[in-house]
Amino acid sequence: MSSVTRLRRSAPDSAPTDLTVLTVIAGFGLLLGWATYTLHGITPVLDRATNSVSTWILWTALAGALVPSRRLAVAGGPLMMLFTCAGYYVASTLGGHFGAGGLGTAALWTVAGLAGGPLLGWAGWTVRRGSGQARAVAGAVVAMVVLGEGLWFGLALHYWTEAAVFLAVGALLTAVLTTYLVRARVFRAWLCPVLAPLLAAVFFGAEKLILDTLIGTI
Image 1 (cartoon, rainbow, N blue to C red):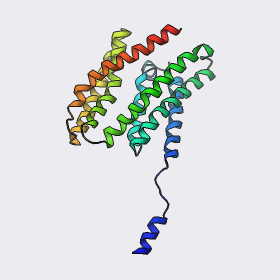
Image 2: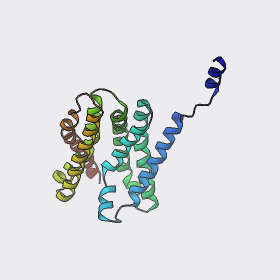
Image 3: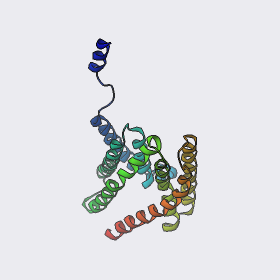
Image 4: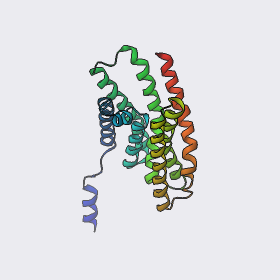
């Protein structure tokens, strides 16, 4: 028995290290930022899907769901948002569409990503691996992104067709997350559909504040 124990202790740990996980997250962020710039204008659907805050944020939540620990999810969220911004603006610079005048815009989106990244990384991790009613709250946080952007397209930009699509997708995402939580027997799973629209209004207000600030700097 002792020889088996020594063998197990001496066996290399096959789990990825924290540095490896964070490196993968950063690399994916760069790729996501590059892709969202490159895919602009190819088709109307791709243009709207890539020119969207929720695209970056939902991938950040997904990354949080895939990492093994809450600590890594919270750390990986802002890291991914930082590298996504870097990937986007590097691609934009190489494409000749970004100069010194856009540094303020890039800085503001970077700060917003660093502020919101931990929340979305936590939300993705908690929906999948958390416990108690926090999982339902986290599900609402993830769903609020799409619903909130739907509010932005409708109330701020008056793009009612896009608003209807985003609100429909947000409602579907809320339903899927709620179903997942109910099947997992999460305590107070009903909090997800109740809080999602309320948090969406908060998200809309935050996005409007950021974009109004950007417009004021042009």
